[in-house]
Each structure stands twice: as C-alpha cells, then as structure tokens.
Image 1 (spheres, one colour):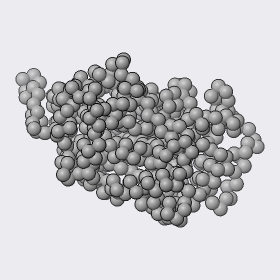
Image 2: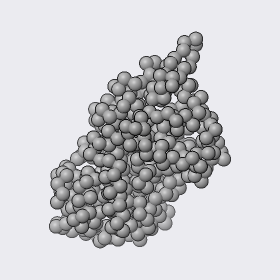
Image 3: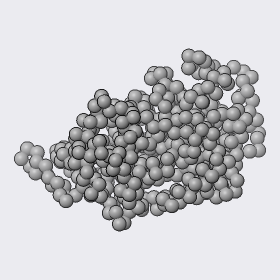
Image 4: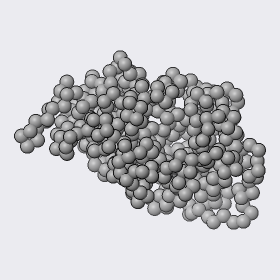
Length: 462
C-alpha cells in the first residue's frame, strides 16, 4: 500500500510501510549507506507528516518484513496483546505521541500498555518526537527486574562494571573489579567481555568473579559476555553462571549472522533458570543491541536501522531479561556518523525499549574514528539520566583497552547520581554502607588504608 503527502505543491509518494518508516527517520549515515534515507529534509518532513496520520492498527496488518520469511515478524504478531493495545487502538501515530505526553499517562498506564505495542509502532512515534519528547516519555516508564538485587526502581541508577583486559589476565580483571566496587559501580552486573572464546578461559573468569562476589557477599550478578552456545556448554560443565549474555538483532537473518536463533535463546534461558542462582528473582538474560547491526550483516531487508533496532527489543522482551542495553556508538561512523546522530539514536533506543517494557540501559560510547568526543557523551549521559536510564557502563578511565572504544567511567556514574540525586540498587546501596564505602548522605567515602577490599589476594589461582 502506497502513501502520499504534499509539501508546497509537491507530492511525495512512499510505496509501502517500510519505505515510509525509512524516509521519516531522522538523518543518519547508516540509512544513507543502505540507500533508504530521505533524499532531502523536505522529503523527510513529508514522510513524517504522512506517518503521523497513519492509524496504529495498520502496523498489525502490514509488515516491514513478511510474516512467512522472518521469525521476528512472527514473534511480534503472534505475541501481540490485543487487550493491552485497546486503550490506544483508535489513535493514529501523531495522536499517540500526544497521548504519551499527557499528564495522566504514568508508569502504571505504560506498564499495562507495553504488551500491546509492536516495535514498529514505537519506532514510528519516536520518528516524529523531539529529544525532549523522548526524554519525557521514557522518564515516565518504570521497568523493574530482579536476580540478586532490584534493578530499575525510580530514583535509582545502576552500572555494569566492565573490567575487560586485552589478554584476559585474571590479576588485571580482578584489579579493575575492585577499583569499580570501591567507586560504587557494579550493581547491574559485573560483566567481562573476554578477549578469547576459549572455554577454559571463560570458566576461569566466571570463577574469578564468583569468588570476589562470594568473598565480600556482594548483592549483584556476574556475566562473561561470550557466545550463548559457549555459555550453555559452561553451564553443562558446572560453571557458576548467573546471567546468560547474547547480542541480538531485529531480523531472523541478522540473528543468524550472530549464530543464534530464538530456539537457542530459549534453551539458554531455561538452562540458566535451572541453576536457580538468583535470590530475589529469575530474570537471567542479558542482551545487547545496536543500531546498524542488521545492516552490517546485510540482513536489514531494506528496513531502516532504527526500526530494525526496535524489532530487536521484541526478541529481548520474550525472555524477560534482567538487563538490555544499546551499545549506541560502537559500530562506527558508517552507521551513526557524529555526536549529533549518536545522541539522537541513544535517546530513541532508550525510549523504544522502555515503552516496550524492557529494563533499558545504554553503553554511551563512540569509536575513535567517529566525529564525536567526550563532550557529546557527557550530553547523552545527562539526557539519559533525566530520561530514567536503568543503567550505564562503568569502564576504568572510560577507555576500554580490550574493545578499543570510548565509553563511560566509574566517575561518570558518580557524577550522574550526584547531580540528579540518584542511588544504586537498594540492596547494593546497603552493601556499600555496610562496607563503609557510602555514608548516610549517599556520598562515596574515601577508602582508608587497611580496608578489607584492599587486601584481596591478586595472586589467586582462580
């Protein structure tokens, strides 16, 4: 079905829903690379105007990738909750934007609505929203998950402690973990990206994190971010796995390029839950996504990268994850060219994920060849804090020496908590106080010589 809209006497035609969504997307280099972007700002405005008049019900009858050929499309439509959708089923995209901005729409309303929304609906409304709109609506959402602590409560900001090392050296990883803990980081997860997919190395890192967690009785969870099939094998071999990680995308073919399928993810989720390692809940999955992943695998099917990204969130919510985050600037300037595009994409992703009911975090990052710098990341960090971002990354010095990209530091999280009056997860906050690392005013205290965490044996054979 084609769509038309006239601007200054010129009529623009959009041949189908996929084209309309792509042309309405704010400018970004990935869509230009794919050849799906609007040819001018005027064409983009025409597409956004036509999109704003589109009834939300259309997204249940028209698909951007055929139902018969894509399991993500089937998942989206087969799991749609018509009753949850009913409060907004009569609205068009523009009216839906206005409805979301209304004072009466709050966290309980949005929580009930989430199962009734499809990724294409939330992607569509995000395309006609300002940055202020994206921040405001996301700030209303509250998505709470649990494993050993409680993630996502209002007024809280969690962090993933990311102690990567270029050779997976256990002493280096342990030193970074202790540095992060002493700076109040690690309540979302202590998660290592291993340099090697060697199974004995993965097991060694898992045992190391678990030993530190057990030694200091830290109410958090661990993860080694290797391929999901390696984690399934590690579970079978008795490794102490808390969260199962996998990068995911918004099309069946893109997920296949990662070496995963919905069935493999179900197997991993069941295996992790079977270990019963959580003390407060059984949210055992950790997913990462990023705009451009489907395009980089030539598996986007002509769908714009932001809509593909939103479709990945439908995959994620099926497995009730503890954590999801968009690694927003990691793929490079071919997909998000500069700081302006990265900021917009980060806020879009966070908004779409939260609206779909996900515990959404963000790796606020960029590669060294992108036209971006730390000032851009500070801006996105602050905007996401205002938007109620669930968690961010804590990387020593904000410079990941294994993955070779720029992210956020332990101190960035302390800044955001201080300026916005945020606290860590409640169980982790109590642990910081018990360890004399946080005082009653929520201020991180200077560590005194002889503190027990300064005596961890770095010559451990774990």
